[in-house]
Amino acid sequence: MGKAHEALKGKLTLISTQASEHFKSRLSSKTYMTNTNCWVTIPENSDFSIYNIPFGIFSDSNDTKRVAVAIGEHLIDLSKAAELEIFNSLDFNTSVFTNEFLNPFIDLGKETTNAIRKLIQQELQNDASVLKGNDAVIIAQKDAQMHMPVFIRDYTDFYSSIEHATNVGTMFRDPEKALMPNWKHLPVGYHGRASSITVSGHDVHRPMGQTMPPSAENPIYGASKRVDFELEMGFIIGKNTSLGDTISTSNAEDYIFGKVILNDWSARDVQKWEYVPLGPFLAKSFASHISPWIVTMEALEPFKVAGPDQDPKVLPYLNYAGDKNYDIKLEVSIQPENANETIVSESNFKYMYWNMAQQLTHHTMNGCNINIGDMMASGTISGKSKDSYGSMLEITWGGKNPISLNNGLERKFIEDNDTVIMRGYSQKGDIRVGFGEVRAKILPAKQ
Ligand code: CA
Image 1: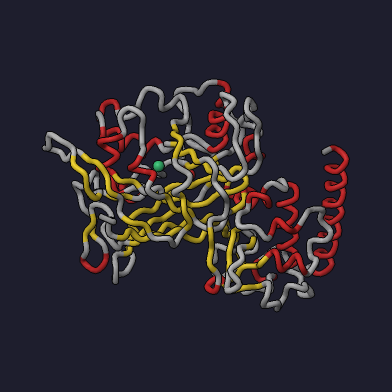
Image 2: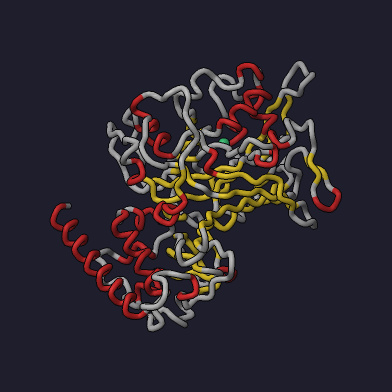
């Protein structure tokens, strides 16, 4: 590690110095990095600005899965870009770009993946770049198929929004004791199912399940009548630990590669009957969808904000310093078949009570190892007001208060052939970094 590490560091410093000299001379009267300096046209309010450069896996007509970054309405095929030798100044094997998952790319380490991201930003602002005008490298996103960005070996879902936990506790248990006694002392979570996490655009059938109808004496088997979304964000692990290792809140960010939006589908009638005493099981494992582009923590750095006060004080191992929440605006729409979409929730990732550093620290406190590609999810992200609730369970208060959609329609939960769309972005001045969307349709149950 030592010498190779130092050599790489030296190279990267040299590159960044050369690059900054180059840009100083070329952009003397301009700001260092702006969308208008980019030779790919970036529409106003694009999530995929020059500041973002998120990573994903795509295929096009030739069907091989490759690594890409998004820019505006296009993507850059990094395997093709590598053939043009733009990465020759960096010391890594470009075969990581011809892979069905990002895991080997992420395994290069942040120093290299960040250098790759910066190099692409520089190429995009260099009018003499070999990438410019090359149709084999710059591909319209509409002509590409996005795939699962990472192989997720393990998936953990936290429950870290105090508003969501309070709302659910009020409905499922006791309004007086909505939060369980442990809730403010540790980030509650459970080990979810990784195999059924899929990427935006893959429709899913309404699940069958066992439920106990309100006035019945015996449970029944049938299609869930209360399919719901959960508005969440997931973070993708960027560095392995060994069994027995722990992570502290001060170095947790080194282990996080980036973030996606997650729809953690939930069958509420199944959940209510099955969750005692071990928590969610089949009500959650039938499907979860993620957005296809992983936005790096470096791209999200400008949007860090302070989290809510934690009272009572947490145990010392969960203490943290600095801003660890992120201002990411989130919205959920429902689009019934042959109808317009209606926004049903506008929330924000900054509401989270427990931050990612605390979640990861808690997760590894017992020596549990984590692996590149693992996903840790936030739990439903609800705000204080009804229009910021992150699930239909909360928005309609258990189905008691249906909501009106466009076209004169009403919803308590998600009906067959409804599409649920989640979007998210951060903005500060002219700098916008977004996630695109995660969308999926609920098809009728397979009886
Ligand atoms: Ca969840």
